[in-house]
Figure 1 (cartoon, one colour):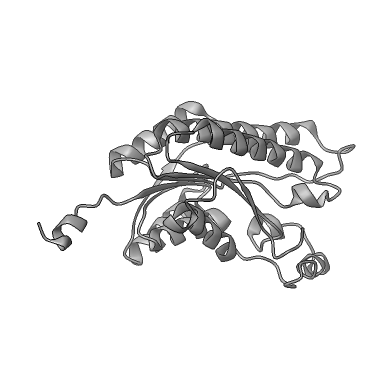
Figure 2 (cartoon, rainbow, N blue to C red):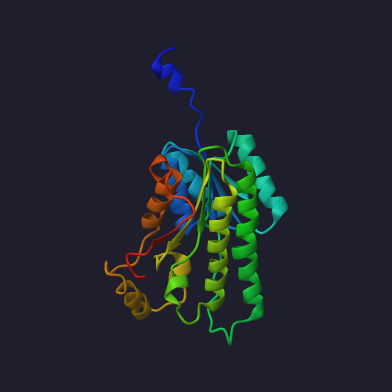
Length: 252
């Protein structure tokens, strides 16, 4: 058998990206597709945006499908992984970028908002990680999302930061629970990043002030974060495991 014919049968690596219809999730999906992964773009409700992500990937020569699932619903998440295995034969990388944020001082925060964040950010991470732990192939990677607000302790972020503290705790423990599986488990903790989620409701002065805080004196971009995801998912990141990687330009 020639070298060419043996390598041509190497199975394509497969990535599931939750929250892949916009922002950091979308940029991560497109970056992994450029790295050669077949990508499953998960979305909660915005089918049109998820289809745009798939179209961008396929137009660039990649392979992708969109699959709807509520990350906090264990039946829907199991179906998401079933659909992935059915379409592409397995799962090698899970990027869990789906999340919600509501900001208010603890004394004022509506408890319904707290419950929504708990459901999506904590239960959603638990449910997605549970399926990832069961299904990731050897050589795989699970990448959760925390936030650098955890270290910054910014007023107004108590509930959101609490959910991300839970994500970090789960990430570090799952990394150890997967001993012997040859699967890495890490979290990325972006700082202020120019996404719709971040920019919504902020005036220009607030955005400019936050952009000036890191020593690099700018906001992060979704591409900055997608590069970190690509590193953790790929061969260069195999010795990074059980870590929280703070990608924030030096803000904290």
